[in-house]
Image 1 (cartoon, rainbow, N blue to C red):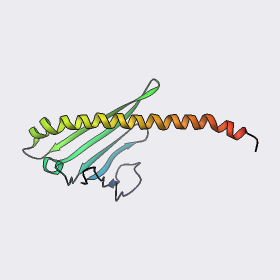
Image 2: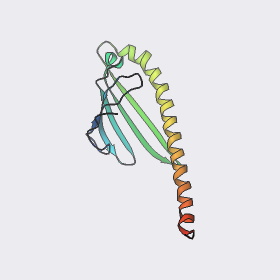
Image 3: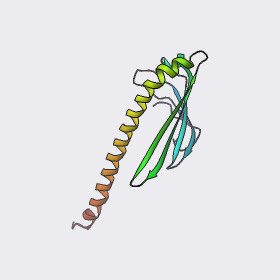
Image 4: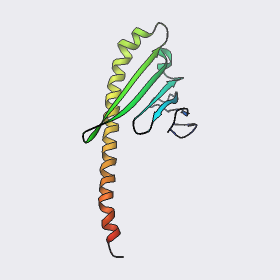
Length: 132
């Protein structure tokens, strides 16, 4: 991302994600509840999305579930006039697959980081108790 206007821990800041196809958009954090959820809007797409939708609203929620967390990502396209059917029939199914792959990837990274932290926490006391 570029041009982030503040910490990404409260409603209000914006930034410009640099997308994999070289295009950009403006992302604004619209809601933030620490440890539970956040929502954002994307506008100003410089790729084909700019010809299909005026914006997108996304929301992530994290709900504790037994030994883990249920992650829910919802996405709402705001189609341009006359583009609703195209967005629904073509873009939405493609985006669903992208979302599924993205959530699975994010979950793997979070699990790996948690395992590293747990491993460090387990080793730390041994290191602190070792003679110098």
